[in-house]
Image 1 (cartoon, rainbow, N blue to C red):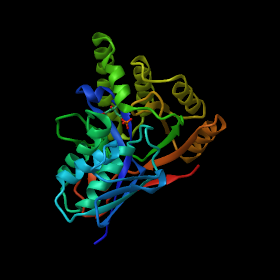
Image 2 (cartoon, protein in one colour):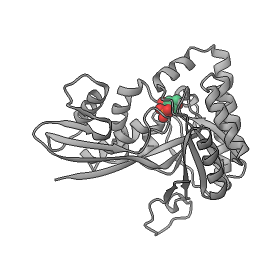
Image 3 (cartoon, helix red, strand yellow):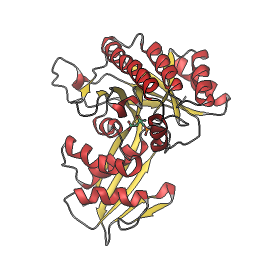
Image 4 (cartoon, helix red, strand yellow):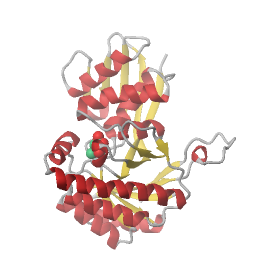
Length: 316
Ligand code: PMV
């Protein structure tokens, strides 16, 4: 039998890096993500054709070890061939590895519970990122918007209004592990003070999102300033945030580990989104718009609607 599965990419709205050290983060799933197809084969193998990658689990590359880590945890028919594809740029802070991991886990065992999916995807993530907080795997599997803290139950944030976000790619990949290590190497006092500020901003983001998102732009820009003080921004990411704000964004920040990767900007609608993406393109950066709709199943009033999720992306 052939099985197909998918999983979401994400942007972190507030709390990257601080989340590794016990503070909360707010993350939202985006329309881009990963797809997996699993089918019986003569030997275990995993392919990402678009990247020219083909591995078997007894090899020693990171991808082979990640595949092995998931296979070791998964009951089910073997040998198996997994084919992966993604429209997320790797190493760009959009949760590419977690989306690939969750899609793989789901294709191999479609009946696994959410908790089991996330636990298996974490085995995959550990191969690439050492000690990830788990926020990427969680939001890749759950979709929607979450308030996440390591070791605490995940809180879903019920959006009161759609979020229109522009994502701009600096075109420079970075290593999450290296950026996390660089933050760890900073003086304790300075780091803790910035983490405290990011924690307050994560609480503020949760509150404004639950009320309609007005004020979120300022939270994003303050989060960027805190991350810059932490040393994870770059002149390019700073410039991309300023460009977005000059083009009308309500706020902008780097998203993910920093050192390269992407920025995210909040805008008030499709017209401003087009202006922001156009301004980035004029400067030579790629960008796209993603619109996140409130999910009925996150609402506090129970709903009989079988609606699962509406996220659309428009090429601007
Ligand atoms: O850049 P990404 O998508 O790997 O996101 C990293 C987020 C960090 O907080 C920097 C690391 C983590 O494990 O949460």
